[in-house]
Length: 518
Image (cartoon, rainbow, N blue to C red; front, side, top):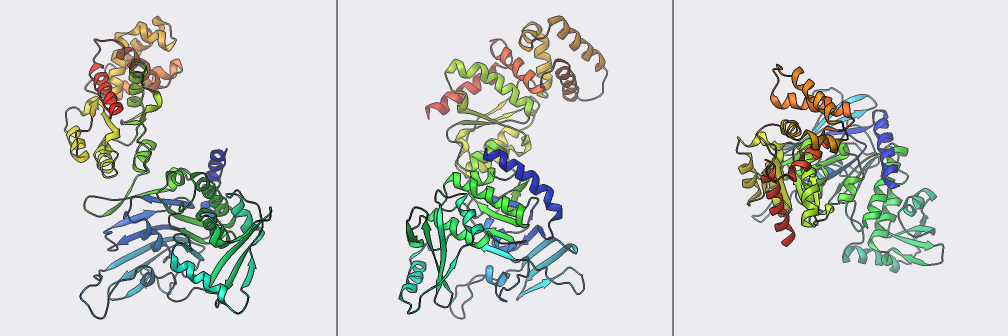
């Protein structure tokens, strides 16, 4: 399974990170492309930068390209003046305004931790933050944007090679370069040749398959062309910083996953650091959570780094939530209670289990921020927010609706305290039913609960913390997870018409039926 291979690679790459001779650890941006103050930390050798359009992904990528002095590069390559140009004509009223810009880097180098700053006032200059006789670290850098031969002018340039009076120079791709491509493409190549002419400024790939088909790059699908060019350019890089913009361009989701697998294998083998930008959830899923960097331009126009989204949030922001109703709750106990309600509600209303997804662990204080993001990406109609009972006293529900820009459903779990308090008390009220569902002798369950109540009767902790402690002890004693106990209790209570969970059951039923009808 490719997922198993990825997880093994994640562990190997994370273990290798401290031993990499070069590692770009952090970029800090000020005053560039609407970014006031953005700090991006790279914690994994293969980082994926994601976010909506105009969220700053390419800006971060191009800034990274300015971090090192690149061996063999020209004086105008890999510098901010080239990668962040202004339109400033000598005549005419229109031109880009000139702002002060700061780009700072933190590195790990063979000589230890280092810092450097590019700053533009009238012109660009470098500073090493007080260190005397410091120099910019040297490292190979590879920067790739969208695939080549994507517009008519590029095609015309390559076709001009056919009018040359001398034959183009042929450079066969190496076995390693072809092998990199063949891990992702459904072809077996006898050879792939790089044809170059016109002073070496123009290049065209020519492929010969083992079954005899021969064709130039002009007859390749966009995905095949992108993979072959990438293979030619990076398969033999060593110790390099590899930067790829929109890595998924022209690639099927399965090939996207294979490419991310190959990039991580290459990073492990050749001491590479890779940073890519993407709009693809497949690419995001191919790296661990600490390798995902989410950028978002907020309501003020500034760009911020969001924490790694949980699955239900990530799916919403990348277009994969439309086929399900998504609920966002606070923690595992809240999820357990909701799942218990759905154990009763979904069969009763003949709604498939896969039609409902529950996400959690984002923190209730982040719900308004999520509501704003879901609204921006046109996904708010597929969401329900569920708060713990102890949030009734505030106005968080109104804040969520305000940020959502609509009357989005916001429900509360039963009770007016932490959900563990309600679970404990509801289990007390129905010991017979709970003991049957949990497979515990009723007398034994009663004795354990009585003993826990007696032990913590005089505890000075908040009720919610006491209930969590009691449930944790009971769960360990009977071999259940606390959230599963919550699910059992919620299922029993949802089946009782007189239970205080019925307002939640009724609200969820109405929201489900409305969502299904729309």
